[in-house]
Amino acid sequence: MKNVFWISATLLLLTACSSDEPPPTVTEAEPVADESVADEDLAAVDADTGEDEATLEIVEESAAEPEPEEQAILLAQADVAPTTRQWKYSEGTHYARMVPTQPTVGGADKIEVAEIFWYGCSHCYDFEPFINGWDADKPASVRFVRIPAMWNRILQLHAQLFYTEEVLVRNGVIEDGAGFHEAVFQEYHRRGNRLTSEDSIRKLFERFGVSADEFERTWTSFEVSQKLRLAEDLNRRYGVANVPTMVVNGKYRTGAAESGGYPNLLELIDELVARESAR
Image (cartoon, rainbow, N blue to C red; front, side, top):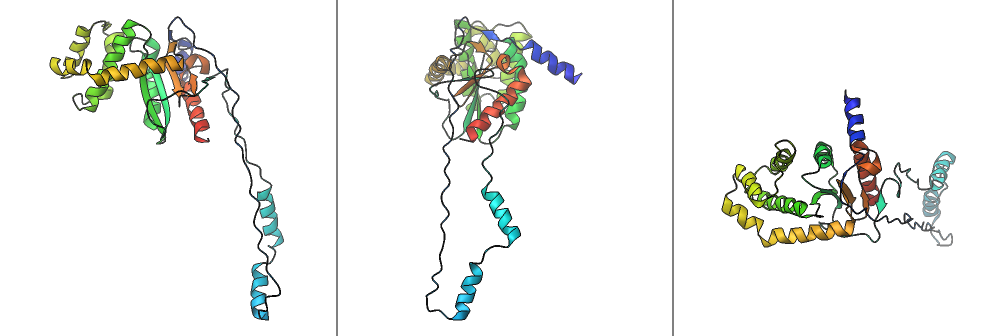
């Protein structure tokens, strides 16, 4: 049954919710690191130091050649060239390289993996358990962020919902951020509430204990407006035309269609993170 689930998920998700414009295709050859090997300094012992025979004997012992077996090991180690990792996924087929590298939401202290999504997208809804599982086990050096898609008025309204939620969770007004995020998906896809007006969105927040005044204050806040402007700018810079789209460190863009399904997409994300970690 598990194999049937994975195969069904893969076949189902080879398409994605999309806008009318395809993303630009940008490729660039993978840079090759310039490696150099410094010459080993050789220490010489001056035999004419005038030291007595005992001292010379100690010096000669310390400078003696290694045993044949030890010498063979050292030579073997010296001849080993750095190994080149064999990557499973390739640029231009499974992901696009964005040139130049684009900004990210957070700083350069971590490798950023961003999911561009929409609450109304059925593929994003199906992808949720996959990306949540990956997020729970990601390395400490990786930061995961969500960026709402912004290409029409309804998506912009849902983006405002997302950032209002994000601010209220950070301020402790909403205690269960993950639960609220899941509830929005359920509201749209299971309850048939398309959340197409501010009034319908406010009622959803009220179910989570957010007062009408608190909602309105946050909904129209400068902070939420700033987040919306950043999301719109990153959507444009990343060339987002369908969701869910994954962007790694502002450099690599991919999705389930390119990678061959959600399990492969998570594997590809890990590979792109490894590429960035090796830089």
